[in-house]
Length: 230
Image 1 (cartoon, rainbow, N blue to C red):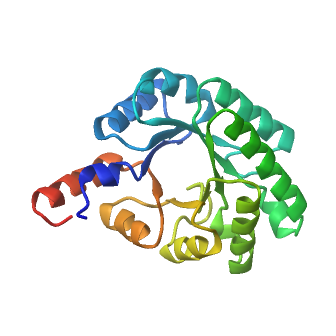
Image 2 (cartoon, rainbow, N blue to C red):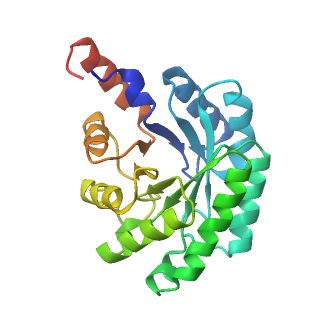
């Protein structure tokens, strides 16, 4: 079946995570997401009330980040951050796993923390995407992180925060897709700025892409669709 611009939009989590963004910027981001019908708006935790207000009644989900961007918050703080976001209307949580604990081999800690966030989210009808921050991991560690995430109940595994030393690669998406079962989806994020990269991510098995260049990507999608080239 041929792709449509709507199919592309439903792959996109419109990202509004830059530290300098104002409330006006966040509201504009919501307007962009509503215009195209993206999967979600992924904003900073302090912006969840704005998203909940502006996206109410739409199909665009309210999403925020937990333990962002380094993943090194105490578990109790991550859990409290998640619980507050859920109480404020958040429907999707993108949490950063504890990278240092993973690299140090403390898999019990990493898995327990993910499980606690997932249990809180699922009880509230929300989903969890676990950010691996692949640029800091070996191939073996990426696979281990995928396994731990699935075992802990994660709904997605996600490549990157966009604030590490590198972002999403097609190779990482393929590896992650091969490292989880069909019930766990894959999200690419970090450096995805055009339609071709979104399409390549889709071909590699990604169901979502975190992007801030939504308007550019959707303009490309609409142009190609009109020309019969999407």
